[in-house]
Amino acid sequence: MTTHTSGPTTGDVFTVVNPATAQPLLDVPLASVEEADAAIVAAHEAFATWRTLAPGERAALLRRFAAVVDAHLDELAEIEVRNAGHTWGNARWEAGNVRDLLNYYAGAPERMTGKQIPVAGGLDVTFHEPLGVVGIIVPWNFPMPIAAWGFAPALAAGNTVVLKPAELTPLTALRLGELALEAGLPEHVLTVIPGAGPVVGERFVTHPLVRKVCFTGSTAVGKRIMAGCAEQVKNVTLELGGKSSNVIFADTDLAAAAASAPYAVFDNAGQDCCARSRLLVERSVYDDFLALLEPAVTGLRVLDPSDETSEMGPLISATQQQRVTGYLDGAEVAIQGSSPAGAGSPGFWVPPTVVAVEDPALPIWREEVFGPVVAVMPFDDEADAIAKANDTEYGLSGSIFTNDLGKGLRVARGVQAGNLSVNSHSSVRYWTPFGGYKQSGLGRELGPDAPYAFTEEKNVFIAQ
Image (cartoon, rainbow, N blue to C red):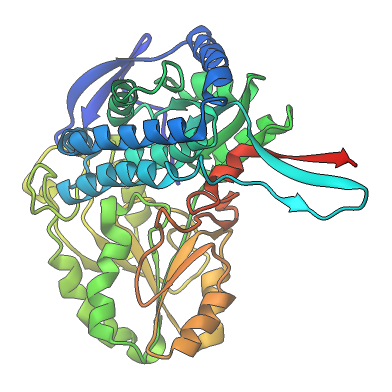
């Protein structure tokens, strides 16, 4: 997943821009190291009370937070449409996902049980105790849900949270911080602190009172965060890049697979670590599949997200637009849709594009483009499909389309990725674990066990 800290800054202020119009929205003050330190110390002091709050009371506050978010769904969605260029459909789902995560993890405080382990000479029991202050660094591509992936289970487990949104997309996080206080969460239990990555994000890594860092972003930055956390043997969860495959076998319903394929990679304009940006098609149906794929790509409604019928919006910034179009220089474009840029509209637009690739060494096949671009390549058989899907440093997600469920299961077991779907493109459900193999990350988020990732397990032996 790609991150950027560049942008129009003036001193301690970042100018947030609407990516569909390239027009400024708001100036957001950026925190200094001293302000970050003050927020961390305040969160540490709030931890003493939050951790000892009765589990039922902590659960009730999380449910109240969920209810307040629910009452502001359209407001939060509208902010994300303007700030992140998300379509209305996506933005409403994302706001609802925050609500659902809070409700789901509100069930955790009263269910975080330990174990009684049979031993000789006494009683042995385990406890799961919160870590303390958790620092969460959120990317710009899905600002609302990824923030909640971290803070909902962390708060449920009894931790306090300091959260740094991306400079490009801080507005929904700031509003969620206000709604948390409105819901009755004590002050400094959830603190949103906008700032530059090398300033606030780096301080999360180096400050000794921050006992865990959750980072979603690029693999390169994730490696630096992991190395920094090692200095204090600090807990870290990393959700990093992806170069996932959508594997199409000849025995599948080709029309259905082709109709769904654009949404697997062009959702959020391809700015998704789970994007199926490699399209592997069995050679015997390669031409037939591309013929079916063309109307699905060209028919995608790429419009200003303020239009409720839009299915794909702009890229987040001019920098990202330039980066993505660079991959298309000299590429063999097989299919290309439209975008408002073709009509001279402002904003950071790139049309949905399918590129035919024969050489697996090409950057467009190997690197995370993080835009509405999918590279397509034929494969010969099941073993070849698995080998091509695994020929990457990443291992986050992927899809397999086949009418032979035995084959689907074999390929799913063979592909080295943390989240796979057979005959669908689903990757993320809040009630199932999410994370990557290889350089796609470290640890798991979401699912019923997520709160335990924000605890230390303590063993106590009581002699008889």
